Image 1: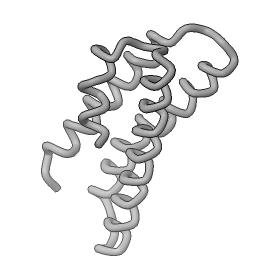
Image 2 (image 1 turned 90 degrees about the vertical axis):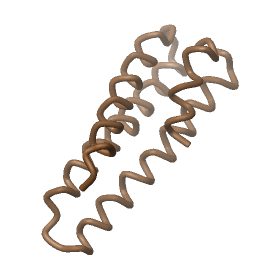
Image 3 (image 1 turned 90 degrees about the horizontal axis):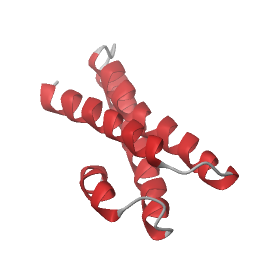
Length: 99
């Protein structure tokens, strides 16, 4: 497995945590933050699991989960951006990586 994807997903998870810490406290935003953290950090965890896959099918399955989690994280980031909850300057690099 290319170490670049492992490093990128790890760095992405760190950025997701940083963004979540900038979110203001409210019921709605707390729910979004939990969803974002769960999906955004799960990407790298699934990529790591794929590296220990027992078969090509298992590898493909784990990588597919990582892709689905990336799409979900992108969705939550778009909501944060659309509601102007966090500055677009902060979100731009994270959004680009999640596309």
